[in-house]
Amino acid sequence: MCSTLSTGTAALDDAAIEPPPRRLSLSRLHELPQQVRRPAFDPAALQTGILHLGCGSFHRAHQALLTQLAIEAEHGVSRRAAGRALPPWGIAACSLRSPAITQALTAQDGLYTVLERGPERTGAIVVGTLRRALYVPENLAWIDLAFRDADIRIVSLTVTAGGYCTDAAGRLDVQRADVQSDLRAPCPQTAIGLLVRGLRHRRDSGVAPPVLLSCDNLPGNGRILRQACIDFAALHDDALAGWIAREVQFPSTMVDRIVPGASPEDRDDARAAHGLEDAAPVSAEPYHQWVIERFDGPRPRWDAAGAEYVSDVGPWEASKLRLLNGGHLALAWPGRLAGCSAVADAMAVPGLSAFVLRFMLDEQKPTLPPSNHDIDLYARQLLARWRSRSISHPLDQITRDGSAKLPARVAASLLENRRAGRPVPCTVLAVAAWMRCIAGRDDGSRTMAFDDELGARLRAHVADVADDPAALVNRLLACREVFDDALAHDAALRLALKEAVVLLQQRGARAALPLWAGGSTR
Ligand code: CS2
Image (cartoon, rainbow, N blue to C red; front, side, top):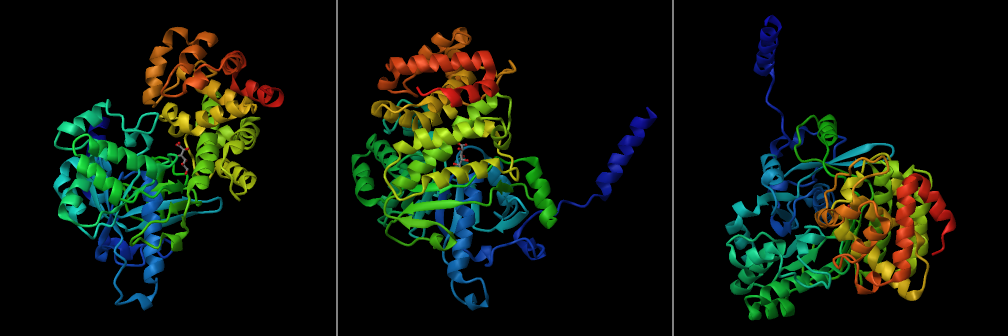
């Protein structure tokens, strides 16, 4: 009784003396210590020229930061810039999903910290390009006005592959419940519904359209976005669909930076770096790359911040998707079976990094379009990035929606290789590992948590045959959302997958990897 009372009193006393949190904000920018980089311009003076859909960690660690560097490069970081107008590239970032991140950003004037975690040190950069963070359902009127505003020159997106609402053929999936809802409900649920609504406002206002810039990991992301917008518009307004097809530019881009999801350590490390509370920090590897198809019209000097403007993004996109993103999947599924939780841990499993290197060089590389890129060097650099212990990149972030990622990143090259008669042992083992993950238990018989919408449906579909390799392979290979007809009817592939599933089931991933990578030439 006594101790309860005294604990309660102490808690009250603490609360009474604890000062309110000192939150990152515009008025505290001048308090940042020397070693923390901050915008070399006044963020409050930045005019908004970019509307961005998706307010997640990747956007904040990539485009929003590179836009800051581009503004600094164009404006000049010194006194020479005094009196010169700031390049008008502030960003209004919209979230369709949840108000949590937009509220956190709004409470700190759009500022947040990027923690660049390198082998020697973690650098902290405060970013000031997000001038507004808006939860779409609460700010639709503002967003409509922004679309009518000639100063909004670029509308960009990071909404993940599922956000494009497309089917396997790359056309708008009109059966989807959220697409159907967008045709009727006053507030769009999908990025495509929101974009087409905005483009209608733009056309009606007689102002030249903005450039639509997709920043998601999809092959031909600009082309896919264009088709989805045209298909959606055509459902209710053919003239609008025609206007979009004629007038709007949809450059493709390749984006690259490893950005783990938010963790509590990020807040601690941001506080340690600058002494202020930041509820929206992001961690990232030091590396970043951005390749953008050239387009007409004003744009930030992203090239001065390390991005490249090129005439054809195709070769960059293909190597990034098939080696980095495909390699990630080939690492993550066996890694999760082996009980690992982060990329660097999986890279330390004997045989796993050799397996992934072989997957990239022997099986993914032959499917890439011709280019003068040094793919061998790229693959080895990827291994070094994945081995880094400076960032902790969870495997379940990579397997999130992994079943939907599989077609473009793994199954497309599998099909090309089978057609060309090239051996595919590593791809077979990677796909077999995915099948074992769908079946539901890792090598220690632990139930695997799974944040994968399609995967969850498939898991239910194979629940009664989870321990029967032949039936498991048959059912999963028949899934048309993942494998096309030719793969589904490939008897030799079916057999090889069954053998691989048996091996994984009997020996576990750790023992299976060296055996498989060493011997098989299927
Ligand atoms: C990862 C990517 O989760 C995933 O699918 O493969 O997020 C990857 O880390 C980035 O594309 C790297 O640029």
